[in-house]
Amino acid sequence: MFRALCLPLLVVAASLPVGSALRPAGADSIGNLQTEAATVAQRLVLEQLQVDAARQETSVASAEVSADAEAITQLGQQLAADQRDLAQHLHVVQSQAIQSYIDSGADSSSSDTTLFAGGSARAQAASEYASLAVGNITTQMDQLHTAQHALQAQESALQARQAQDRADQARQSAALDQADAAAGALQAQQAQVTGQLAAAVSAQQAAQAQAAAAAVAKAPKHTAPTTTSATIATQAPTTVTTPSGGSGGTPTPTAPASNGDPYPNLPDPVLNAFLTCVVQAESGGDYSVVSPNGLYMGAFQFSQPTWNTAASAAGLGLLVGVPPNEATRAEQDTVAVTLYTLDGQQPWLGDRCSQ
Image (cartoon, rainbow, N blue to C red; front, side, top):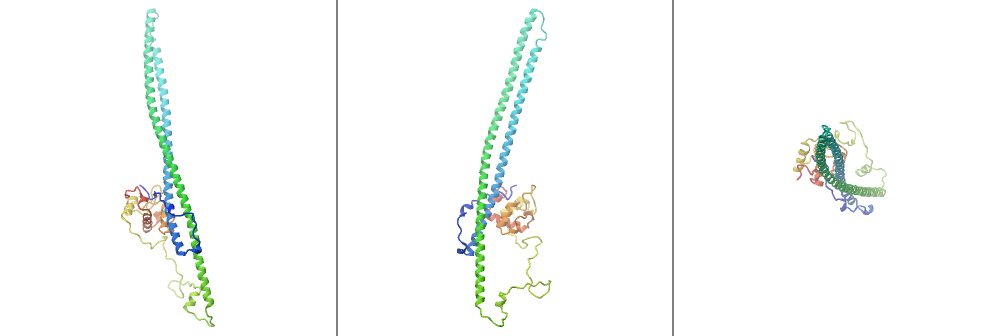
């Protein structure tokens, strides 16, 4: 059963000028920097999915090369066994021929006539047995040569396939290296954009604070200050903690209890026909299922790396590192819908639901 791991090679880095000089933070608006940061983040998610796919295909190619090597080893062992069998057959045929030749002269007479007759008989027997032995040996050698030629042809075919598999392995390794490099470049650009955004926000906050301080300095001073809504806004807020149901101040807001669920109020999106089919094909609708090898989890059978990148793209960063089968139904559906939006049916290519 195909899992939500195998993705197509997405060419996303080509459209982004990685390594190009970014504009100074002082010349950019915060809105422009936020848009640029969001664009880089989305492309980084896609590039990380590409790295996952390239890593899996490299692993498959390596396994095929190992299988070819094992098959060639077994074929060599079979050739050696056939050669041993031939040597044994030759020895047996030769022994039988010699023994038959010796046994044919056991009844020889001492008279001259019998002696000559016996010698003639032995000579004829020897010739017959020699012909038989040579014939047997020739037949055995022909059979061995035929088997050897067939095995050698198989070995040549295996070696050719192994060479092709090694070429595939090298190509997949190169693709993985390229994807890793592109992801690294995107991460560096993301860090640079994030730093510029933080600097721009800090500069804006400093300018606002300076303007507020200047406004306070220019305001008329009163001997008896009165409390107004304007002055209240400039005062530091006071936090008063009161027991439940009590009074005496404004209580500090607290996060609602989630019972371990980081997104308790997350709405469950409606699945399209394809994703509805995937749920049934991959898990039979069981959102807590785990594959026998432990690598694929949840209703959509996500691998952990693909889940992490898709959850990040969905804006559910608290789910990164959480096993998919431990997430709620709404969370799993949201991550699956996001992955489908990013890459369509490709993550489940080979599933019976894919077209």
